[in-house]
Length: 158
Image (cartoon, rainbow, N blue to C red; front, side, top):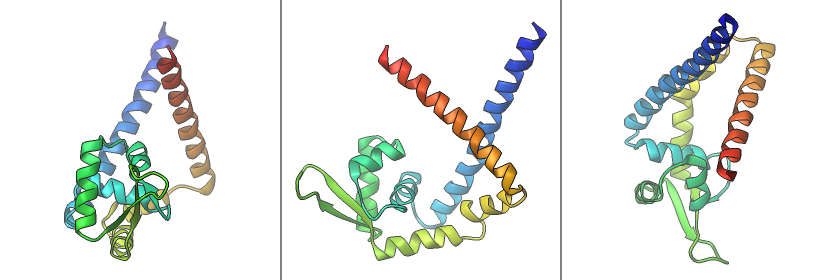
């Protein structure tokens, strides 16, 4: 019985640790977004598109987990401000292709270099770990993520 409680305590501690890290990250995101006149959904969209040359609005929604109405409103604002370019997909007029404009790329670069922004703070926090510790942490996160995704898929199949 005691062993079961220890396992539960460890899993609860791990879950609370993830929640605390996420909460702290959201605070940095809120601050950075606010300082640049962005909403959290707009920030999320820019970061989602960042590593791709272009992405359909539907894919951005899937990756960012934003509801369609929130996504549309945020994209409209980013296009209006000149941070995003939007065009119709040639083969499918119902699909919209999004890409960062030059102004959008500059904004994302500013966000990454922002001294008290998430990227710089997280980089500094990560530097306290050895390469081996980072690798172990990444492997553990991947195991948890994979397990949760599998359980979700099993639940959806029922």
